[in-house]
Structures are given as structure tokens and as C-alpha cells.
Image (cartoon, rainbow, N blue to C red; front, side, top):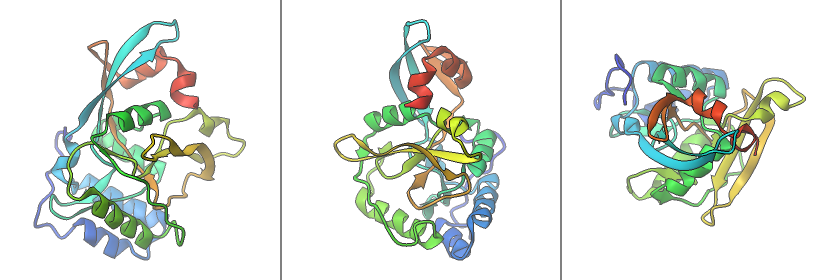
Length: 241
């Protein structure tokens, strides 16, 4: 579902995943965001990233009716590079929103994160890191660790990152400009990270991941905009946790 007008990633392009991290090694969060947006706007994202996967779950609407919802989700967390040299890139929710808008996508709620985990073909154990958590080099190292775990398996993957999520806890927080994170499921299915909005929205560390979801979803087999679904279902279950 590569957006119309977005060029395909060129395998011989100098803007590989490795090149991104070499350039950004000393960048702060704003510079790293800007570079990620530059890659995204140029279409320098591997083609396989756009092979979105259907995830179907049951939801209860505000009036108590059960509905079937199907979301079409990116198979992995946001990444940049070529088809043969790419890397996952943690970014702020501000940059994620710009990329989501350009690609016709939104970010998940905690409920959707759980549904994605349950549907994933590849479930990997989280690998916490403790030194220089918000540095670019730690983000690169974490990506390489995940790739070592993945062992070239293909399919919808989960358990490797905390999701940046839509959550009512952001607007309810006593301080402004928050980011909400959730997930990082262990192999027993329990998330390490409960819904948390304690970080300022420009804080990004190696464990954060951006999972894009197509704005067009199916509700009882009918295509609707995701906002229609969110308005119809129990918002406490979808957004608060």
C-alpha cells in the first residue's frame, strides 16, 4: 500500500539504513526526526514494509453491540533504507504523525497493540538495554540485536518494541506535551510496559517503535475510516487501559 506518488526505495541508493545511523550518530532527537522525515518523504523505505497485514479482532460498541474489526497494519516498526539495507528508527510522535498523515495511516491504541501481538507470526523476547538509552548508537545496536533474534524469519513481528500509542492518558496528564507508550510483550504475552505518559513528547529511546496502521479499516466487513470505528466502540477499552 505504498502511497500514490511515493517513489520506490532504490537498492543502489546511498540512503541505506546503515547510512542513516552513520549520519545520525551524533544527532539530537530533532535532527534525527528531520533525517527520518527526509528519508520517508523521499520514499526511502523498503518495499516490504508496505505489505500491510490484516489483523482481525472483536470489539464492543458503546451501545453493547459486538462487531468484527479488521485493521491493516505494517508488518514491522517504522524503518528507513533500501530493500537490502534497512533499519528500524525510533522517532517522536510528532514525526510519526507527519509520516502517518503522508502514508494514510494512524498509530495504534493499546487495545490494537495487543491484537497485533496476538496475531503476530514472529514473537520475540524483549531485549532491554540500560546505557545511553536515548542515543542513536544504542538505537542502531538494538536494531542489530533484533535482527539477530529474527534470524531472517518473515511475517508480522511483535515483542521487540514499546509502541507509541493513542491514549487518553496524554490529555489527562497534569503536564502538557506527553508521549504515551505501551507494550513490549514478553513471550508469556504480558507487556513489560503498561500505558505510560510520563515522558515529554520529544523523548525517544531505543525501545520506542512506530507501528503504522492504515486509516481505512473494516467494521463488520464494511470499509470505514478508523475514526468511525473509534467513535463507535467503547473508548475506555480502546484508549485508556
